[in-house]
Length: 50
Image (cartoon, one colour):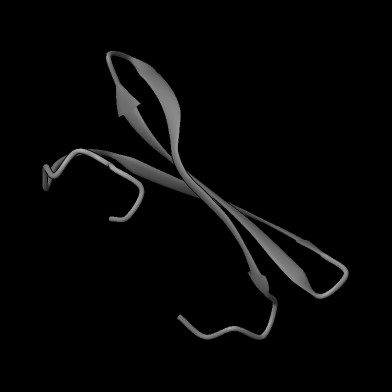
């Protein structure tokens, strides 16, 4: 995963996507020490294909 996330296969990751005016706002979280912390966030066109 980009954004400096720990490179562990068992690291829980969550992703939240907000859509507004043809744009997607994506925020990714990982769990560390019992807390969910943002490790990546970006904006993309709503018709982008990843």
